[in-house]
Length: 117
Image (cartoon, rainbow, N blue to C red; front, side, top):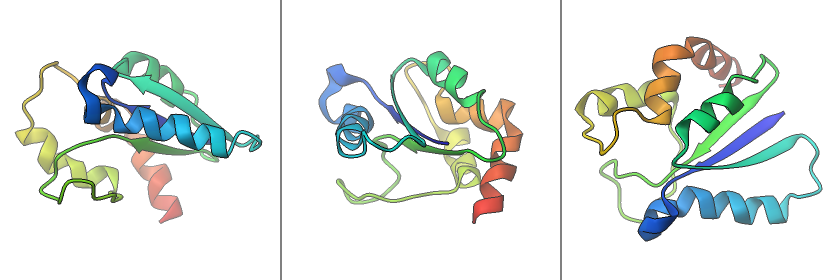
């Protein structure tokens, strides 16, 4: 199973890019039985419930809008461990983020990801 999670706040325009991307992808790939599209929005605890279902045969893709010193509109992929330096520096309006919780509480996801790279 591939889980694609779109996160962001739909009330803040471009912050919702992940949610809008998941909506569009789910329309295009609605016949695919092995892909689950999740509109996580800002509900990180719902997203965590979805992540907890992962097994060693699953892949998780998180789509989010963020500012990582790239040109606006740039689409890029990163390994989870590459976010660690940003997480230490990040100032957020809420205390936790999905990536922070995954890196702190679900260390096995990194190991699963390493199997595929």
